[in-house]
Amino acid sequence: MGFLQGKRILVTGVLSNRSIAYGIAQACRQQGADIALTYVGERFKERVEGFAQELGTDIVLPCDVSEDDQIEQAMASLGERWDGLDGLVHSIGFAPREAIAGNFLEGLSRESFRVAHDISAYSFPALAKAALPLLKGRKSSVLTLTYLGAEKAIPNYNTMGVAKAALEASVRYLAVALGEYGIRANAISAGPIKTLAASGIKDFSTILKFVETHAPLQRNVTIEEVGNVASFLMSELASGITGEITHVDAGFNCIVPGMQE
Ligand SMILES: NC(=O)c1ccc[n+]([C@@H]2O[C@H](COP(=O)([O-])OP(=O)(O)OC[C@H]3O[C@@H](n4cnc5c(N)ncnc54)[C@H](O)[C@@H]3O)[C@@H](O)[C@H]2O)c1
Ligand SMILES: Cc1c(CN(C)C(=O)CCc2cnc3c(c2)CCC(=O)N3)oc2ccccc12
Figure 1: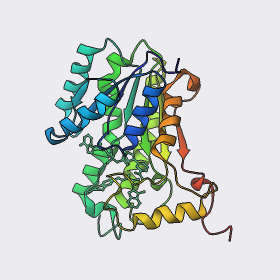
Figure 2 (figure 1 turned 45 degrees about the horizontal axis):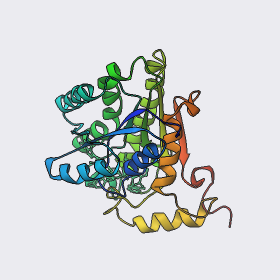
Figure 3 (figure 1 turned 120 degrees about the vertical axis):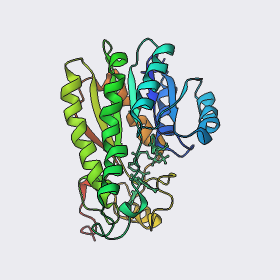
C-alpha cells in the first residue's frame, strides 16, 4: 500500500525516459497513484502513449501550454475521465536557444524573453487555474521544477534564470491563492541532469563535473531521486508544506563553490 494509493495525478513534460517528469511519474505510480500524461506535438503522441502503458494508464492528452485552448481542452478531457484531480506536475521549460547561451545581453530580446516566460513560468499558474475545478474539494497539490539559476547568475542560463525566478515567485503566490481551498503549491529545484532539455546545452558535461566535484554529496542527482521527493511533496506526508522550493541537488546550493579547497 503506497502513500499515494488512489491519488490521481496529471504529469506534464514526459518526453523521454530520461525526463525528470518520467522519474516523477514512475515514483508516484510506485506509491500507488493513478497517472495521466500530456504531450506536445502529434509526432510525440505514440512515444508518450508507450510511456503511459508502462505507467498503467491510457490517459494521454495533447497540451501545448503556449495555447490557452489546449490547456482548457486538456482539463476538459481529463474531467471526462476523472471526477477530480489530486495532483498536477508541471515539468515544462523552454527558451529560444539564443537566450540560454553566451552573453546575457547579447541573447536578450523582447521575443525570447516573452517566450521563455510564457512557456517556463506563466504556464504553471495557468495550468493550475485551468485545473482548479478538478483540484478543488480534495487535499490536492501542484508542483513545478526549477533550477538554481533562478537564485544565482549561472553562466549561460541567462533568460531562463529570469524566467525561473518568476516561476519560483508564482509558487508563493499560488500557495496563497490555492491555500484557501486546502491545495498546496511547491517546487523542486533540481540539480543538473542529462535530459533532452539539457542536451545541446554548451558545456553541460562541464556543469555535471563541477557539481560532482563541489557538491557536499560529491555526485549528481538522478530523476529517481527527484521523483521520490516529488511523490512525497504530492502526498499527505507533506500536508504542512506549501510555497516551498525544495532543493534536490546533492547539496550544491548550500555551498560557495571552490572555497572548500
Ligand atoms: N535537466 C536539468 O538539468 C534540469 C534541472 C533543473 C530543472 N529542470 C527543469 O525540469 C523541467 C523538465 O525538464 P527536463 O530536464 O526533464 O527535460 P525534458 O526535455 O525531458 O522535458 C522538458 C519538457 O518540456 C516540454 N515542453 C516544452 N515546450 C512545451 C510547451 N510549449 N508545452 C508543453 N510542454 C512543453 C517538453 O515537451 C518536455 O516534455 C523543466 O522545467 C526544466 O527547466 C531541468
Ligand atoms: C543546468 C542547465 C540546464 C538544464 N535546465 C536546468 C533547464 O532548465 C533547461 C531548460 C531549457 C530551456 N530551453 C531550451 C533548452 C533547455 C534546450 C533546447 C532549447 O532550444 N531551449 O540548461 C542550462 C543552460 C545553461 C547552463 C546550465 C543549464
